[in-house]
Image: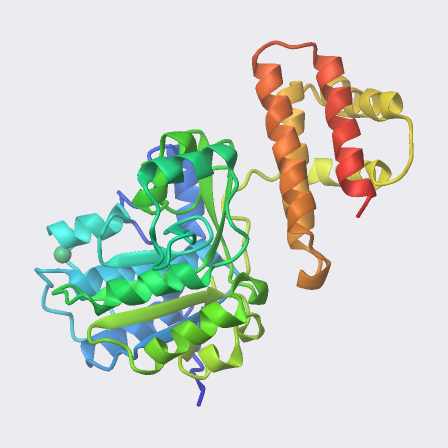
Length: 387
Ligand SMILES: [Zn+2]
């Protein structure tokens, strides 16, 4: 039974989430402010205010909306309130800011704000990795995790083993309220500032220093049937003091069996449907890149591609080649998110992004710019042509 709650927008509540520690240190103040300004979900915040103050929180929620960072932030705010050890007396009615239900200062509050609370688990492809080779899956060693991050060789699915570890972890008794957030995530160069603080496990890796952690909504292919089935029982009879959140754009991206065990909360951002998550946006370049990447997928003259690319970005628009490549990288990211799920090719996408990363590294070590660009375009041509 799916309980779809029609939460009407309030409009008059101009909310801002101002958890000062909630943004990564790598973010500039300006991009953080811009990201957080887009993160208000007034009606959903009011819904959770009501559920928490009346003691009627359910065990599982599908947070449905296009701004995944905002959904994540909402789940963290609920986690903070649930674990706050000095909860203030709530005002009579909704204050306009869900975070007012937590003190914001106790250790639990600070841990959640730093995304480092041991009871708050983010389950994505990038976090909470397990060793599949063992008979009983266990969390991989920090050295192995470091290797994985170095190679950016993350799995493309949330695996059964991960769910097994999660189930084991939830079976251990705890005083804290466990909050489990299922989401997808992707790492990008740090030049794309992230709108949320990455989970501490991911952040603490040496290899992720110059990478940013970006949230993506859950998609059907992220779970396999086995991992979901393993998980359904626990969703059906959750251990006490445990809350599950699934962050998705639509219910269709989740299995019906998951949705039917959760309450679906439609969440609309104050700014409408922004899902740009603070990625720098240069609309003026998009038309050129649209045409350019289309040309790359067909046979052509690599020298002409390179000359046109440099001419447009460097000569006409005064960008450095590295900045131009970052625009290309962003364009590929946006383009990858646009088509339907069946049409997306994660391998090609990842290979393209890796090739650009490599070119950026080469440029940083002062290699011949034209040659690096030429090699990159040939690689991209190979990656995209055969698809
Ligand atoms: Zn507190």
